[in-house]
Image 1 (spheres, helix red, strand yellow):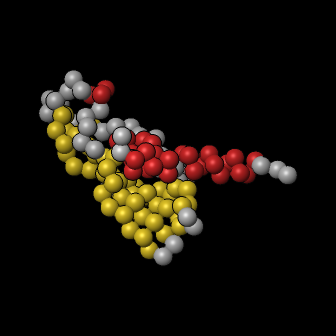
Image 2 (cartoon, rainbow, N blue to C red):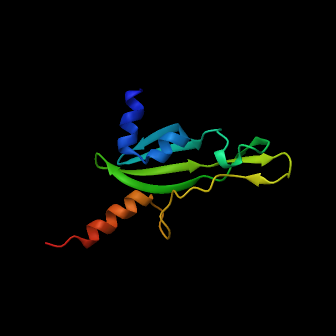
Image 3 (cartoon, rainbow, N blue to C red):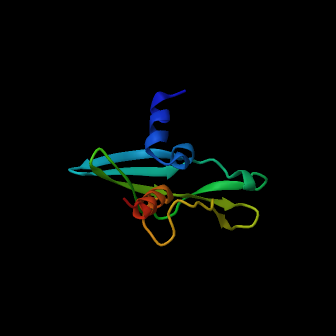
Amino acid sequence: MDPYIDLLKVLLPELLITHFDIAKHEINKDVLHLYFEEKNDIPKELSSEILISHGFHKAITIQDFPVRGKHVYLHIKRRRWLDKTTGQVVHRNWNLVAQGTRMTVEFDAFLKALGQYQD
């Protein structure tokens, strides 16, 4: 086991660590930017198809939990594949962003729970 991967799974959504590679990171004063690219692993539900890597979708940017007083932004590029049989572009259907927000589902749930807290 890689201790760095285990640590990242505590700090970031596990989905990102499992299915995406960290392409780069930037720290600008009080903001941490993490850039992810989806791994070139064909989705299991499409494993019977003949697929070739066909680049990436436009990156999305979402806000995640702050870390050590720094705002955290995740820049995520999802992969797409070309189905050689049908000529269609296919991709995984990820639920990375909470509906109606630009933050991760976990961060959205955390903020909703905070809003329900009463003394």
